[in-house]
Length: 80
Image: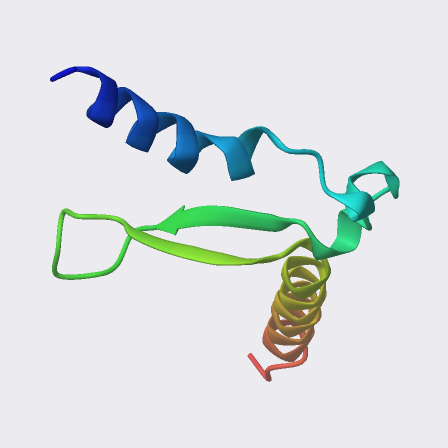
């Protein structure tokens, strides 16, 4: 009797996790999946973890590539 109460409580807590939800069959949008990246910051040895959706990371990467290209173009156009 002493062990039945904790086992019953454990079974009740685990049952919602085991039950299948109605929306599980639908395919998920891969652009909404969360992805985490680590970045090194100046002044610390600990990396910083940032989580965003795949679509947000693609927009950030596109912006960073455009900024890098613009910086290179500006450097090429400097008078010597």
